[in-house]
Structures are given as structure tokens and as C-alpha cells.
Length: 308
Ligand SMILES: Cc1cc2nc3c(=O)[nH]c(=O)nc-3n(C[C@H](O)[C@H](O)[C@H](O)COP(=O)(O)OP(=O)(O)OC[C@H]3O[C@@H](n4cnc5c(N)ncnc54)[C@H](O)[C@@H]3O)c2cc1C
Image (cartoon, rainbow, N blue to C red):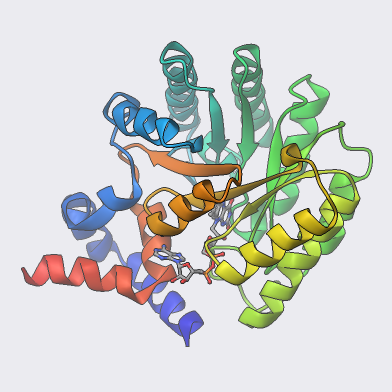
């Protein structure tokens, strides 16, 4: 049922006039709940407040699927400016990057060149980058890109595996065998609308695979970033960490800015390392659509805004 709802929202979001209308009014109607600011300068006060409340941050400068060199270069400029702004503000510059915002769709070498500069720039000031995982067409390209970053010396770079993809258990083995010591890996359920040929469709199967991926990554020595708002998964992951007596630096609980703030607070109060994924920027439409697609109540908030 939820998968039908998700398909409908992501389908409607792709219709031209809907997109144009939403881009004009969406910020006021709810996008600001999930996006910390339209620029890093706007977002800095919220970011500082979150850090004071005990959260670490990973900042995402919004943008995806760019199709021109100039747009990819301009995106990279925005990310570089954000690394500098965070460092100046005394906040660790930990960034999430979508490979398609740097040109992966049309020029993997360009994406590698831009991503390497950004990863080295972040590592030079005590930060690092994580390559977000986008739809299944870009998994090979993203894993290759990660290899290129690490070979170029940006050894703290990391990526994400999606529990819903059939290929993820095999990808995990390949990724973590011979990975640099202390490598981290984020595990998510997966946010895109994918066909049954490439992805599990059943929630229970996705949750089982999610936990199996986390446990295998821990066995292989990785730091696992358990990125979910699913209470059951968080509980089971925390129980595994306790049972295996894993050190605190072997995991993080990661949640999205604006999603389940009470759960976020409880996890901080319980003493877990918690990191929030904080999107920033004017290009919030695709990200916002995926958040609406995850939960009917989010779309209801927007509808209430439209109907006054
Ligand atoms: C830190 C982080 C990074 C991510 N990076 C990626 C990535 O690189 N690639 C990718 O494909 N996906 C990524 N995702 C998204 C992920 O794949 C899921 O789509 C998303 O986390 C929702 O699934 P869930 O695990 O929270 O479980 P769900 O079963 O969707 O949700 C569990 C509970 O949280 C509530 N909830 C979930 N989402 C919302 C929401 N938007 N608003 C309000 N309540 C909500 C639900 O109502 C439910 O009660 C990321 C998620 C996080 C937390």
C-alpha cells in the first residue's frame, strides 16, 4: 500500500506543471521543514544549534542529475564554498555529495575530478565526504567513483548501500574487502522507485536485509552508519552493538533533518552517537518529493497549507 502511495507521489512530482507550481510555492508549504536553509549562510544558525544539542552533522548541498559541465562545476563550487564556510564556523565539514550533481550521468571523469578536489579539500580541514547512493543506474558509477577518490588519497571518503537492491549484499563484500582501516559505510532502505527486477518490494524483506547488511559490515570491521527512522531497526542495531561490545566509534545513528525530532532527542539522551543529514540549498524539489513520498502525513501537511 505504502509502495503504491510512494509510486503515485513520485510519479505526480515528475509532471512538468506540478513541478513548476511546487517549486514556486513548496518552500512556504513545507519544504523548509526538511531543508535547513536556501544557502549555507541561512542554515548556519540552525546547524550551530543542532551541534549544541549534541548532534553531529552531514551537510548535503541540494542538486542532482545535472546534464551540463557548467552546472556540475557550479555545483562543485557551491560544495567547496560550504566546506570553507563550515570550517570557518568551527563545524566539521562532513558533506554528502550526490555523484549526479557532479556530472556522473554524462561524464564520469569530470565527476571524479570534481569529487576528488572536494574530498581532498574537506580532508585537509578535518572533514570528509560521503557519496550518496542514487537510483540503481548509478550504483556501479558511484562505487567506481569511491575507488577513485580513495586511490587519489581521500581515504576517509565513504558511500551508501541500499537494503532494497538485490545486488547490495554482493556490493558490500566487494566494498569492504581490502577497504582502508576504519572505513565507514551508511546503510539505508532506499528512497527511489525501483522495479522488482532490481529491488525488493516487500517491507519485511527489506528490513531483514537491512539488518543482515549492518551485521556483515560490522563483522568485516567497518564503522556502520545506521541511517533510518525505523524504531525496530534502530533497536535491533543497538542490541547488536551492545551484544558484540563494539566500541562507540564503530557506529552512528543517522537521521534526516526535520524527520522524527522526538526520536532524535531520545537517541541523543540515550547516549548514542547521532548524526543528522542536513540538506541546504535552493534546489530542494527532488529531495522534498522523496520525503513526501515516504509518509502520507507529510503530504497532508502540504495539502492543509494549500487549502488554507
Ligand atoms: C541519514 C540518511 C541518509 C540517507 N541517504 C540515502 C541515500 O544515499 N540513498 C537513498 O536511496 N536513500 C537515502 N536515505 C533515505 C532512505 O533510503 C529512506 O528512504 C528513508 O530513510 C525512509 O526510510 P526509513 O528507514 O526511515 O523507514 P520508514 O519505514 O520509511 O520509516 C520509519 C518511521 O519513520 C517515519 N518516517 C520516515 N520517513 C519520514 C519522513 N520523511 N517524514 C516523517 N516521518 C518519516 C515513518 O512514518 C515511520 O514511522 C537516507 C536516509 C537517512 C536517514
